[in-house]
Structures are given as structure tokens and as C-alpha cells.
Image (cartoon, rainbow, N blue to C red; front, side):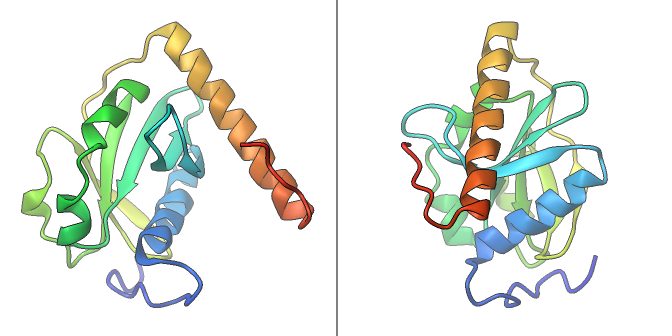
Length: 155
């Protein structure tokens, strides 16, 4: 990975968004596609949701600093919406703060590396179907918005 702690690359993106970009790039190398800022259910918004080649669903929460992590009181609510859960942090983050029973990804704006796999908890088939549909619709809305600057989402 290049410059693990260099998150100052793009002034238009926040540090967590830069981590999400690096994570999404790296996941393509594992044959996963991803979307950012997906809402699995009311009151929750995940930083990155990834869909694997066999339909596996991973959620990755990007934390740019200690305060960002410590203020996150919703992360356990994400566990019921994925097969695996990960934290993505930069190389300066104090990883000892992160629960050991979760996955860990070290990331920067350009790339990422899975350090620890999160435990697998398979989604029920009905929940998986809902999540794959949400993923597809979210991706389609983002693609349409990128093509059409005047596009307004109903969500």
C-alpha cells in the first residue's frame, strides 16, 4: 500500500471517505463489488457494503480516528445485516481499541489490506435477498446520478 497515513489526497473527500475508497479498490482484488453509504434499515447507514462473487455480504465501517470510533454506538446493529463485519482504519489508528471479534482492514486512500477476517455469520436467505436488492438499487441510483447531474433520488 502507498502512504498508509496520507489521507490528505483529496480536499473534497472526508478522511472516512478516503478510507472507503481505498477499501473499495482493494475489495475488487478479492472479486467483491462495493457501494458506499448504504442504508440497510432505518437509523443505520454503513460506510461500505461489499457483495462477493457467491452473494456474500460484508459491511466495513471506516474510522479515521479514536473519537470517531468511540462515538459510534450503532455498529453492533450492523452485524445482523452482513455475513462478515470489518473496521477499516489507517496505520496510525490505535487498533487495540477495536473489538477482537470483528474484522480489521488497514487502509489508505489508495488501497487496503485485510489484517483480520471477521467471523462469518451467515445471513438468513430472506435477509440476504433483501440486502442484495438494496445493494442493486443503491448501485443503480448512484450510477444514474453519476450520468445525470439533474437526477433526483426519491430516497
